[in-house]
Image (tube, rainbow, N blue to C red):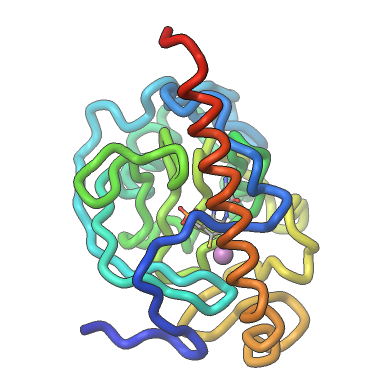
Length: 232
Ligand SMILES: Nc1nc2c(c(=O)[nH]1)N[C@H]1C(S)=C(S)[C@@H](COP(=O)(O)O)O[C@H]1N2
Ligand SMILES: [Mo]
């Protein structure tokens, strides 16, 4: 059994989760994996099926939401970010050497970023399957980042854009900036930028229940609306 990082408790379920204003937002193109490469690059590109032909891996990892719930033993399948970088990003887009920060954007508008060095860690995947099935819309179809050593908000669902930037350019976040730590490593309890992790634990924990309910409710509503639509 893995031990959980400081301040986390185990959740039996992998909740659909996020900032409340994302509860009713869903990916626009859950069936079309396209990754935009842009920023300080030699050529901006839209890569269709970016995982095609790359070496696939399966990885079991725990997932840690900054609000203190963790789920153990998720089985992700996809391609290591490092391989996407070396085999697709460099040959197709050639980021400048100064672009050591990557701004991440999702189809639902969620934004964060991570240092390129953190993304190149072998534990970081661009995943398209979870627990033996294609990624669902709830969990980030068609492609999601999985960065298990960082809080869940870095594991961007429905990932659609990698913007390579210099560190002084920074990146936009969808949260208040104090909530987005530049690295957000779970082992160091880097929950946010200003307040200590041990304080944010206490502030975030009471929000879990209501957030889970809102996200689940929005998901049920979407499924209901989908069933009313003709198949295409
Ligand atoms: N696109 C997108 N990615 C996101 C979020 C989101 O709202 N939108 N929420 C983040 C947060 S805070 C968490 S804890 C995890 C939750 O993953 P899940 O919804 O697949 O359980 O996704 C992260 N990635
Ligand atoms: Mo989270």
